[in-house]
Amino acid sequence: MIRVVADEGFNRKPQILVSGWRFRTKFETIEQTAIVEATPEEVYDAYVDPKKHSEFTGSPATGSPREGGRFTAWDGYIKGKFVKLEKGKRAVHEWTTTEWPAGYPPSVVELTFTPKGRKTELKMVHTKVPAEQAPEYAEGWNDYYWEPLKKYFEARK
Image 1 (cartoon, helix red, strand yellow):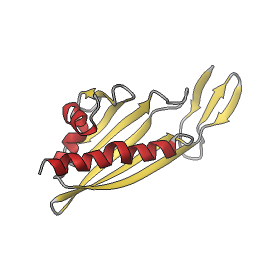
Image 2 (spheres, rainbow, N blue to C red):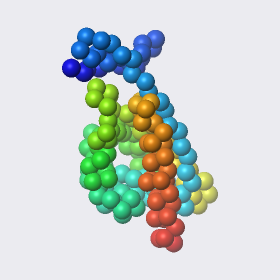
Image 3 (cartoon, rainbow, N blue to C red):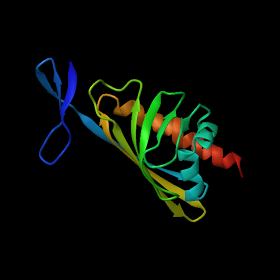
Image 4 (cartoon, one colour):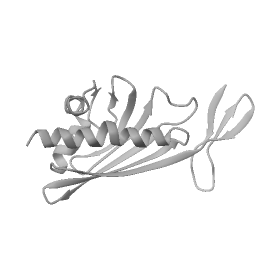
């Protein structure tokens, strides 16, 4: 049996109870920045709209881009729920994959979209990432999101 018995909080470390034994869960945070040749609204829409998301990643995505709306990406490999959406400014959502460790809570992704001349600075902070998976997910964000997103908008010029 695996269940989370504490969440991150002030002076508390998350723990997982496995058949009577307690183990501390280890989380990491991934922070990345990308410059995209498009407006903040265009970059935001490409990320949250499932049709545009599929276009730039080249893989099926589904979802409802509204607060509380659920989504999938990469043909169901990624799933989550939108928590906060501010068109062209900010998107916050829960995020897990089919490889998520049992008992771990969903991670949280926060994207901010800032105009920089004719471009957008996209900042991503991905918190509560299982420590053992963080290096692969950090690489994946760049290889499967930021680089294809840049190419998507470059091709539309």
